[in-house]
Length: 333
Image 1 (cartoon, rainbow, N blue to C red):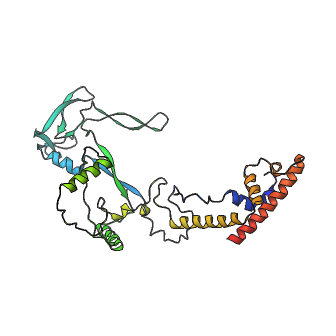
Image 2 (cartoon, helix red, strand yellow; image 1 turned 120 degrees about the vertical axis):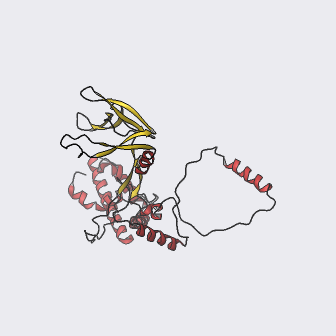
Image 3 (cartoon, one colour; image 1 turned 120 degrees about the horizontal axis):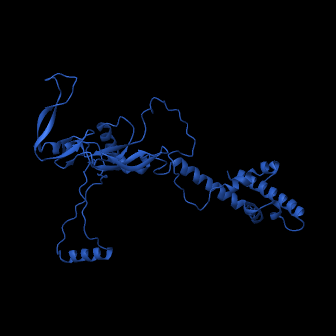
C-alpha cells in the first residue's frame, strides 16, 4: 500500500498474511540455529574449543606404508651435501633387494638417474606421471588440472572422510562414559564397537520369494529350536553411540538433525492461536482478508460503482475486518 498511515493501521492484516499454515507439518529449519532467542550467558572460555570438524584419513595409511617397506632390503647411503666433509653426511635407507622396482629419471641437465618406482604395492613417480589436482587458474579460482608429479612422489594417494568430530578434548574415557549413559538411560546392554566387514554381493530376493523360502524352511523343520531373547542393544557401527542420534549432531553448512523442541512448541502454539482466531471471524471478514491478499488495489474489495466509490467501500471493509481480526487475536492469545 502506498499510504503509510493506512498500512500502519493494518498490522493485524500483515500478521494474517504471514501466519503459520494450520495444516502444514513442522518443517525442519535448514540451519543449526534455533528460531527462539536464547539467553546465552555462556563463558566464552568454556566454549572456545567447541567446533565442528571432520577427520580426514590419508590413504595409504602409515601402517600400510610400514608393512610394504618391510618387504624390501635396504642399506644406508650418504645424502649428498657439499657443505659437509667426507664421513659427516647424513645417512638414509635405500631399497636394494626383494620386492622393489627401479626406473630412470632425467634431470634438468639431461642426465639419467636410477630411481625407485615401486616398493611392494606402493608406486612412485619417475617424473613423467601426472595426477588430477587443484590449482589456481588465470582468474585466481581453483580448477582441476593434470599436475606433474615430481621424482620420488608417491602416486595414488588420496584423502577420505572418516566421520564428523565434535569439539576438542573428547577422550576415550569420555566416550566410554557417554556410551554407558545411553545404555543406562535406554535399559540396554553396554555397547561395543564392531568393525565393519566387506560388503557381501549377491542376489536380492523379493518379499514374496523371502516368504516362500521361510515357509519351506518351517515345513522342513519338524521341531523348531527354542527362541532365545536377548536384552536390548545399541548400534555398534560407531565408537560413539551418540553419533547414531541425529538430534545430537550438528552438521555443516546448515545441515541439521531434528527440530529443536522450542521451535516445535512455538510452531504448535502459533497454529493453535490462529486456528482459534479464524474460527471467531465471520465469513464476511474472512472473505475480505483473503481477498486483500491478492487484490491489486482497494477498489477490488468494493461492492460496485465508480472507482473512487469502490475504493472507499474497500477501505471501510478492510479496516473493519482488520479491527475484528485484532480483537479475535487478543481473545485467542
